[in-house]
Image (cartoon, rainbow, N blue to C red; front, top):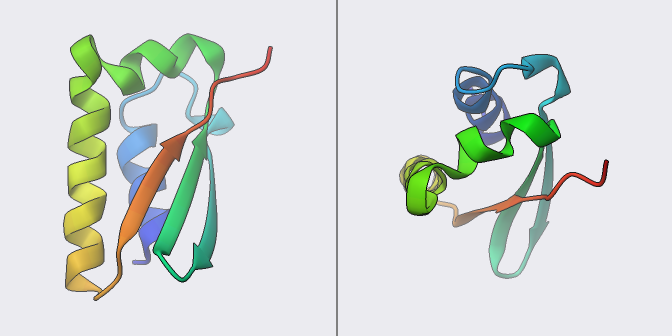
Length: 81
């Protein structure tokens, strides 16, 4: 399982509209950036109280990257609509 599949699996388990979860992967000299986009009504579920859920997701991905010898950053996009 790669990093995109892992993040998608984790996030889809937390949201009410999993069909709208999208993860894009880009790399540069600093590491891997996973950009997460999802439905507007699911933002609160992913951010969590005081950002705790988002911190937990970032910690999971950091650990996943450590095992793969990569630095992984997660960016959560704010929905436009």
